[in-house]
Length: 246
Image 1 (cartoon, helix red, strand yellow):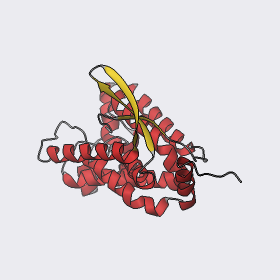
Image 2 (cartoon, one colour; image 1 turned 90 degrees about the vertical axis):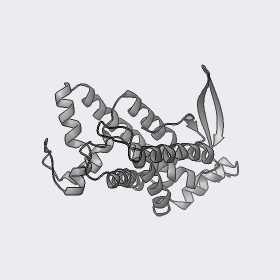
Image 3 (cartoon, helix red, strand yellow; image 1 turned 90 degrees about the horizontal axis):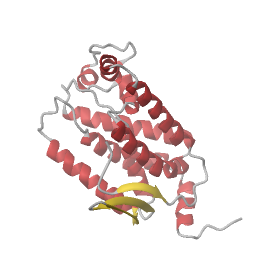
């Protein structure tokens, strides 16, 4: 799950011109898959998740453990991105995608953004898989892909203002902070949590922190290949209040 003590709830969309069609489609696809999950009986749900989640042993050994899915096992690197472990898991992921995804889709264009998103998700899963190649616990969730979106955001719009919510005892506080602070703080939590999880028995599952880290690093690197420099300049100019009408 993507999360931190600072919960992003909105950002500055100045200069965004392209409709976020892919972001909306991804959210709907994730919600549809999750609805399918929660309407399954326990045994059927387990078979579904183990069949379509990205299981490290299956990926590293190119073998399809029961329940076999038929298509090539590497396909689960994609299908796993649309499965989630609970309401909090999918809720947090979709919120982060909604907040940060529209700016990045605008900065890349629809098709390039979709490819970028999927590549970051695959990179995140592979990072986690390489740390425990023999695990038979499936990796699920969109966190790696969304972490890549956040990596792209902090590269392109480090000074963009993000609205965040946090709790002071029981009183919610909402304020604005630069993206580099919000996302930087989030990444430090993932790195620290990932380090703490090294060597911990994950037989019963848990949070795949290194999928977050791998997806984020992939986003930081791949953004240079996918971003439309004119769209990025447009957004940054609008944020600075220097966008002129023509």
